Image 1 (cartoon, rainbow, N blue to C red):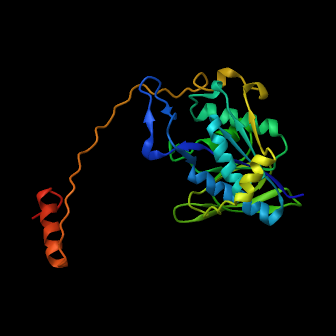
Image 2 (cartoon, helix red, strand yellow; image 1 turned 120 degrees about the vertical axis):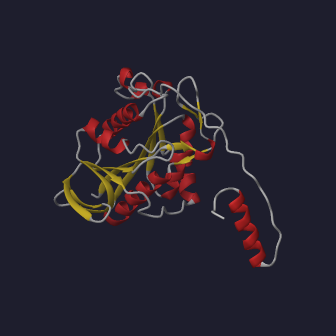
Image 3 (tube, helix red, strand yellow; image 1 turned 90 degrees about the vertical axis):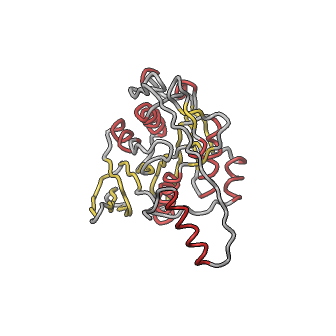
Length: 269
């Protein structure tokens, strides 16, 4: 039978280009290049390794504007079987609580699943909330900082190895369950162009709106977000000096560099 796995991904702005709307306190996404959150790619890799080992199917889900279809195409290129995008203006401006609510509703609509895998955190907010909050909405057991997962098909359970600062913990959990993967645990595999083409040719990505889900609009988007950005302070850019010292003698170059560092107060004379 294998495992029915759901993996969450987020379509995040390039962190070097993030801008904040000073009125709403939310990210300005329009015109900004985006990528699949790198820590979610680690979760995708874990899901695909479990699929390779035990069989089954991997479904990627995301809540984002329509442009995030490109992110779902990317993970399908890695080997994910299908993608579901929750996209609606009602979902805009959501904090982690409202986002996790919508994702939980997507998972409820999917219905047939054994394991939900999330990345540890996202590079645009670094809250590490989503896995725990999705588990809370669905009333499922949750393990974070996971490094290894083994599946027992007969018992319908998993053994999870969780990494701590100087030790490991081993948990046995009955499925279904939610697991967040420790960052940098696995190197994501490369995409295959044939898989990406299949995503388009076989319509492997569905877009669900609030009308497709059993959504309470008071729990979604800005309306369902208790987090409030009360004020924003913009830090001015620090002026940087650029100097080039063309010297082939490494000793002279080193002396010049040390003198410059002393002048800037970065080294004691």
